[in-house]
Image 1 (spheres, rainbow, N blue to C red):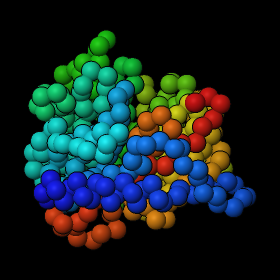
Image 2 (image 1 turned 60 degrees about the vertical axis):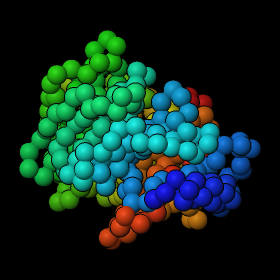
Image 3 (image 1 turned 90 degrees about the horizontal axis):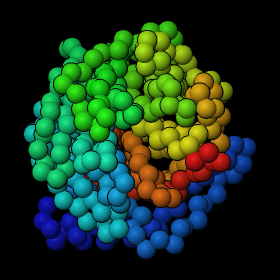
Length: 328
């Protein structure tokens, strides 16, 4: 795609995103259109044709980093302008990027999907500084979260997490350890574990399990791997994907449902109550993960409903207004 066509699609995509309204559906109530924030920044932006996004992360500056399933590149996009450029070159279709997170020192932690790779990249140079190969046959390194002492990665096809220790300044260690999951965890016949985030009190991990009890969350002890099902009442997450925790408010993306389920958690992450569902019928096209900047949540449209993506398939990132709670 030429720079001219990319710029043209950027303007068209931004205009369409501003024009579309997200719907907040309170429990027992009627969906109401979310009010625009009045920001001059675009509410969304296109990605290069054929990019095939899945993960998104935003750090301490207003730039989104989006990974490519198609070729493993990472695109950095200014939230203020919607303009972007590749900052980490792709290694090819056998080395995709699924989930990713950035830290405050210019590192990107990349999930390599079925390549079984965990990669660390320097956004300033574009270099891959470390690569780890984990798991066994059929491993899929799906999502990642950074905690004060470690980076944690999910494996969608095996009941285990991967832990990469982080030093005092966040520098990654030289070894990845495997944490087997037990307790209430049960592995489904297909993709099971997906998004991951700490509990509000930071003492445990929450992991999407798309199989147990029709889909939900598991609270995992990071020392033992013992998992306990989180009580979400009647809420189910059969298509649960990325998780975004803001205070005690959890935004759980349900990709093929084209929705974000918003739940209020207790501090320990043992219980959650659904407070609303966000939909955007004119803009959501199978969103997968979420990242926040100020009052907006940004989501890439992965378009997993397209059976055979081509180099001409169009993709974009859209945003909706965040839902706040007293602890956010």
